[in-house]
Amino acid sequence: MFLDYFALGVLFFVVLTLFYGVIAIHDIPHLMAKSRNHPHQDAIHVAGWVSLFTLHAIWPFLFIWATIYREDRGWGIQPSGKLQAEVEANAEVTVLQARVLELEQQLKLPREIV
Image (cartoon, rainbow, N blue to C red):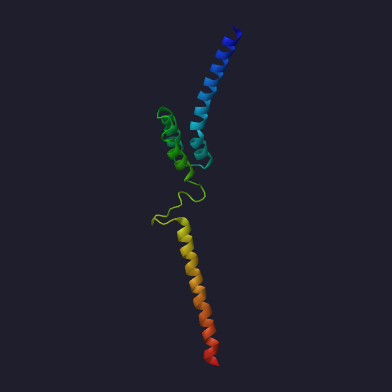
């Protein structure tokens, strides 16, 4: 008789743990969005609750959506459609090309004088 009640108690404990575990897991993208100051925090939170009813089928997309934005660089894409790193690299290449031309001109001047 004791083992029956003990087994029933263990069953309730496991069911409650799984229930709260699923709820805790579904909230991870919202917590990430909140910590990153994501502009769509509320939408991610609501979509997380919707994902409970779809057995977390959309949860990976919510995870990606929450992680793709960072407050320091935004979405990482410029209005021209280029990535932030690409724009910075192009600017650096332009500066280096100007420096190379300047050095080439400095090398040519003394030779012409001699």
